[in-house]
Length: 164
Image (cartoon, rainbow, N blue to C red; front, side, top):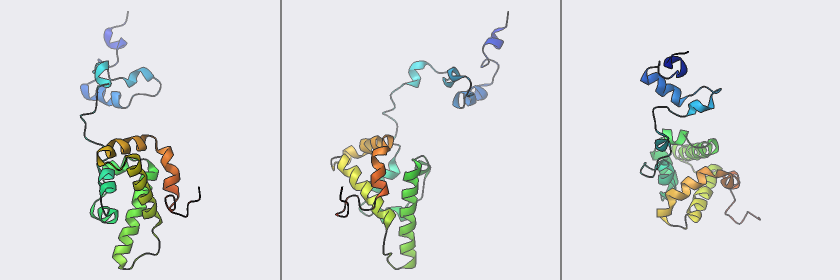
């Protein structure tokens, strides 16, 4: 008969090793995704008391001048956690604004800033132009961002150039 330590491999590990394994379990054992040190109810607890995860986007879309906001703020870990096309759009828009301001001459076109403005208009429309709805709307849009892809791609989505 095998000893209890042989049956449960977590017993022979230090607390740090158990925590590390629970965060990055081996791929061949799906049952190890669950942390053995936590109750099942803790894994599904309400996270509504957690801080809003998209504060940068909330600040950007509620700012009266997105260009000024982009130049005055630095990229945070929050931006790195966004989907890649969001990161790219924000980075390109920031580069356009910085380039225009450092060269002291207006650029003829701002395709990324126009696309970012389209996204902002869409988010505000989806929120019913109510700032109290903005956090929930941003969260929803980021989790279902396939609806946003045409807006991100086209700099003329909300203009008269859009014939759809």
